[in-house]
Length: 339
Ligand code: NAI
Image (cartoon, rainbow, N blue to C red; front, top):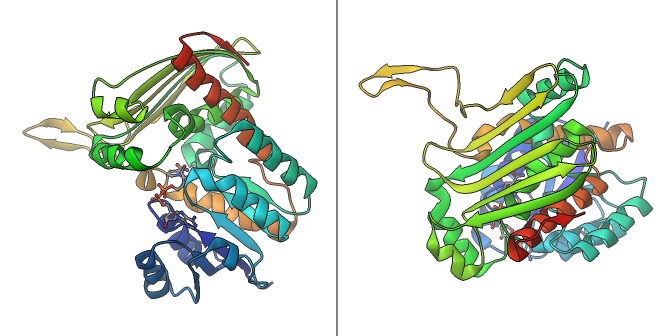
């Protein structure tokens, strides 16, 4: 079978990871075209990745009739319109999270996705493709833990990236810490429990980065929530982990518990020296989720080839965004929000 021809928009922090993965690790696809507003990034794609069709505009790129699919890795505010444009051109769509920043917009996009059942749509919740999370999911689904009673989710970015986030936040909207970061944890809680959120109560502070208050962003956000099946879920998102990139999930059940990423280990090495006994940690998301990013794109391409539905749908994107927006509203109004 001929390779699936992909056009990718966005070649920034994550875009370069996806582009390089398509070229080097997705055998059944070809990175046929790219679009970016930054010349240097287009040069990188041409020189380093050998991409022949480079565009300064997404709309122009999707006019190329050779394309089968798009991979959207532009800033979050562009996703809704770019997904819609791609579906209207008859293209399969992989989009980074979130689908959009506003609920009404996202609902329209989800309707559009549902109106095009012949086109694969997959959202970038890559943790579902990480081997540790897949192992845990199998254990939960096989009943090893009994019934889930509580989950605890930590997602803390490395402090090494805090200054650049402050600069970013001065110029662009991330959607807030819950939409930008907790959304992955919200999706995991829905995935593991199979239940929807009922109530959320959030808090936040900028003790570690007071400058963020000026741009209405948070360094630390926390939320306590209840699901429809009674599960209690606690979330903590932050941007100041000094030891690296800390993503940790705990699932407590009636028959046992699971911890994923207890310490965010880099590998199996333990170092014994003057500092004591040290476990090196992963430094950032491309490192921690290296294989998950590869697996999710292979799954997308396989779904196109096999004419199958994706396992991470538009509805998953909508539901998790509803929860993240409720968390933000709870922080802003200091109220418990019922979904
Ligand atoms: P970035 O700011 O590093 O890169 C954005 C890219 O989009 C740049 O290449 C820029 O030139 C391009 N761009 C901006 N406006 C454009 C336009 N109008 N048309 C075409 N290209 C345009 O952003 P980053 O960190 O790579 O994030 C991109 C997306 O990926 C965001 O939606 C973010 O939420 C998501 N993301 C997801 C992660 C995950 O864990 N799944 C991790 C990091 C980001």
